[in-house]
Image 1 (cartoon, helix red, strand yellow):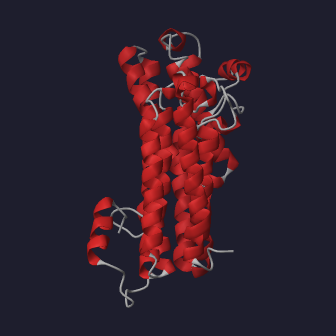
Image 2: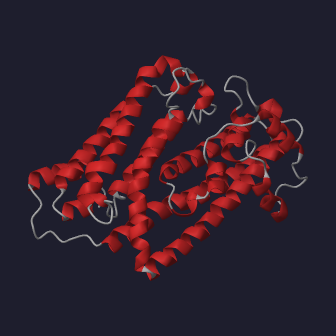
Image 3: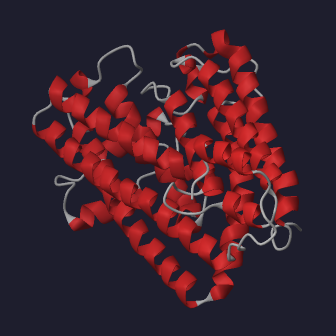
Length: 342
């Protein structure tokens, strides 16, 4: 079962875990995290990218404020789902080509202008969609599409989308993302076959889930919060154009929590620890997440528009995320023991 406040309250009422509490098999934990956490997120990504492709097709057919807003909503939905998946870099998502398509990154204006000129006459043909894999880095994926759909956040991007090949280029990107979202499902299904047929897959999957939960917290602190910069510009924060920087961070923290505590209908590492008499470690992990979310709550919704004004809140959240990573890598991993502890 997933770990929530009501579960913590119940544990406190019940007292310490009994010595005869059934142990949670690692195979059961693996399949629960796969079936109840990873695959629902991947299916959501496939659905979101398909919707984004449809909305871009509608925008290019009739570019007006209504179709633009619909495409923007579809972009935000796709970005939010990816941010929930991104910090963990598990399975097929660890591929560099996949990450470059979906993760927020800088757009190169010169490369983007050249890429727009290469837009095929019909971006929806199978050949054209396949060729989206060759769009240059700096002009591809969700980051480039964000720039086309949201501009600089000050001037409407609609006039630019109504001229030349700009909208069709955005449609081309979106259709390529939809194809990749679907092929990722096939790749995850292959991983599922391996997990069900070969028990040797279980240990590396779980150990990576724990280690990547820790490194994922640091990725949020470093990448999504521009660590190391005293006065970072808005462009250093993924999602600044669409004003989704904070929402993206929240989604990433959600993803880490789901890996640690499982879905409400499944089991997580909290159940594994509780079955080993380590409820105190679970409670402390819960406290770490609460502190992280409190720091996130203090961060203004549109902080990336003027990051200098939220310097204190940004640093506080970075500190909480690094403390969470330290706890996962330290006491949590120690409590799990072999094979998680090295």
